[in-house]
Length: 280
Image (tube, rainbow, N blue to C red):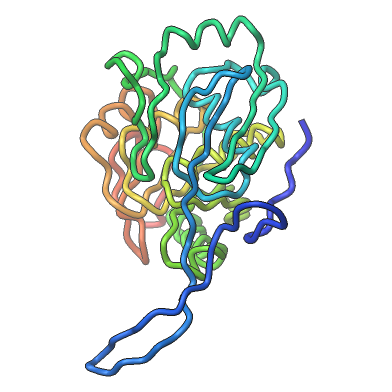
């Protein structure tokens, strides 16, 4: 598959990713009226082989990548080659992504029973059984080596590349970084798991070597963030905030290096520390 071109922040047609709104701002007892930039969250309906599957609230950018990443990390398809096509349609009340997958994979979806709304902050919304929600990825393997200096250089990079968040202050980012090269690609969304699915979709679509780099997310490391990262074989996940206990247990079981509280000149390594090196 060819690398997808990043969509502009403001779509030429259909739903914008942000809007301008007049607001009253109060600070230090002083009042002013000014224009503010507000991020949009839009219902995105993922429709497989003509049948609606789930509606996610997301930022309306990079939707084909989002659909591919979601399809892979949710176990709907096994490889990018099974993502046969995706067409995006703007509707009056949201966006439809019409996805074509092999009929065999589509038939397996009937057992999942997932056709609920996925709220912005929910990564497991719509799963109807515990088995669907708590899926165990295969073990990850790889000899990635990351120095603390390279990690913190990448953390500086991600701040500079969060263009939509710089405008709105309201979106998460998931970034792909390679030791010695910094942050190479970034995707943003109001939902942390949506941003990660967009990034994973991009990486798979463009044929990146997933053993060569690591992922940074500007959120907590909840269970589904570890699950999605390990599902595609990435060996190291860095989160700006804290991990959950379930996320740590899954990372430990799958062999993934999980780092939390990564900010400024600090970080905490929770699992498999052998991939991170320190000069002292």
